[in-house]
Picture 1 (cartoon, rainbow, N blue to C red):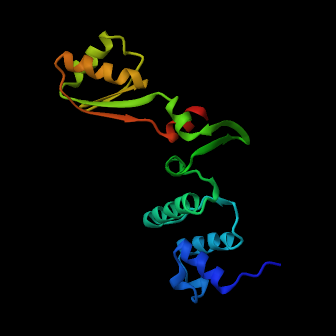
Picture 2: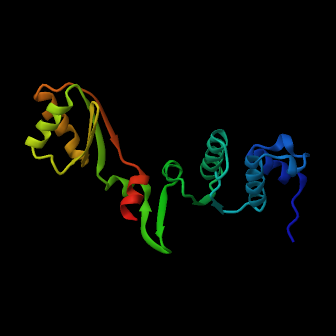
Picture 3: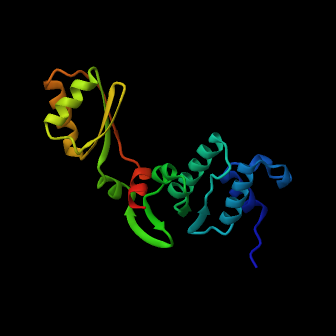
Length: 195
């Protein structure tokens, strides 16, 4: 069977960022370091593909950031394909080029993350100086079906990319001061709409 040399072991430990703990017992490691040991074990055979199942589960925020950096490094610098299973959808959005959404054991969509999200409508929040007047203007201009919510000095609408600047122009032309336009299109929204 395969027997790794000391040099190969040190190389993968260096790659996952734990070479300085090479001689320590694994039982003394944190959860995040144990995750890295698992990845190092997978790397020792120089694979073209690694499957990672929920790699950031149980990690603190710093550990999650470091794990994401490691995954990017393996993909971009070492040219390893990563098959990532995760319920943390913003993590998938940050890391993945392609995705598959599975619901109740069936594939319901697959493709490029960017392409799939670009087909989604945006949830756009406008911060305005007069919320009641802004709402009336938008209702008079045919945006009643787009209106999702109002809160204090913000109004949120569901819009396509091409509608955002038009809504902003209508508000400004009617004397509304728009201080912020905050578009939101996330994988989480997309996933919830599909499932």
